[in-house]
Image (cartoon, rainbow, N blue to C red; front, side, top):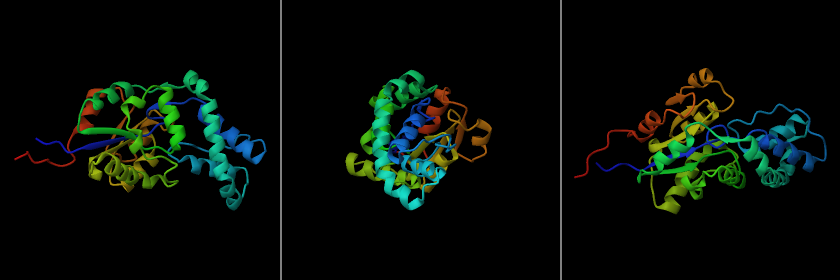
Length: 244
């Protein structure tokens, strides 16, 4: 049987890794440095959002007008990337790779018809930094990844990853042979917008019971059930005909 090529798109924060306080600290310092004001407790949720979206929401919480916030946005993103680079030691000290991730990455890496990358709201620089900080970059084809710096609209990112895969790797993959693995209902919305399947995992900030109600193709407390999850991700989307 000829296996249809598959694309596994991993979210980063809360799915591959837990970053501890590093990301929030970097955002707050970046916004403070550009606005030249104290940030305080803005209570903006980061889960399932792009870095530009988070930055705009923080500025909105600080009563910055939308027009002014968009003018500041490029500077905030540049400052954020500098702050994340400066926070690598904090990231490695307080963060961790989440349960089951390493084994599942390794299992899927052994299948020649499977390509793994990321779909994340992080900018490319921040995603690469976080992934490298925990030694996961060897499993992931980051040249075909879809980042928050590719589009501020996360719902465009599945299509962006598919286009990169076709252009850079000469692989045309059907959307229903794509899995998005994430930890929020926004990851599910992104997958559905791109015609992909979705596995949600409760290793972020959203409880399992809440994620389970979102209606993903599969939901797990974490990724430690490696055999079951590997089988699920490798299963054909439709019945694939045998080669003649």
